[in-house]
Amino acid sequence: MATSSSCSSLKQNFLVFLIVIIRSTINSPVNGCFTSIFSFGDSLTDTGNLLELSISESTKPPHSAFLPYGCTFFHRPTGRFCDGRLVIDFLAEALGFSFLPPFYGSKSGKWEKFQKGANFAVASATALNSSFLAEQGIHSVSTNISLGVEVNSFKHLLPSLCSSSS
Image (tube, rainbow, N blue to C red; front, side):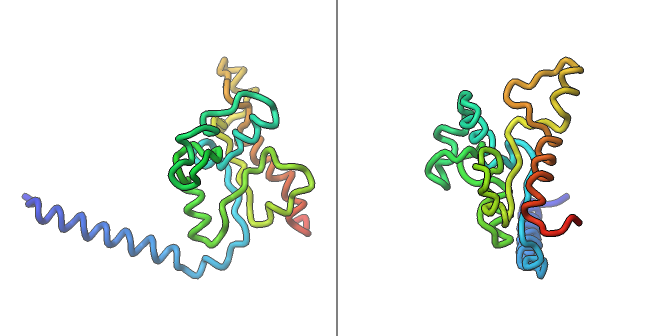
């Protein structure tokens, strides 16, 4: 039977191992291979898209538009559904990028701000499109954005970022 000191030692060894793995991943040669990051998803990765959409559509602002959201790191609400940074923020920082700007709500002609990446994630986004969900009797009250809509927005942006069709 394991004693509490051997369990504690095992936990410490595991923590050290985990830190070494994370540091070696962050400092790996892969760092210089990426020129941009594009993010898709829901509130776990939304850097302000739902907020931008609510402003552009003149609808009620989401909870992420008010404190305490954003108070820990940004000291103001940014549209992130947390009090600080999201995992995508830490990932971008670890790879040497600035925080990903939200794609939705951007003014046309401002595509150059997406050269280093963009965030297409929208809080309450679904994996399936809203018409399929409606056929099943499921209605999303927050947004009709789905993963398919996010990917189509990326496809619309792509020609302005790439010089070749491939």
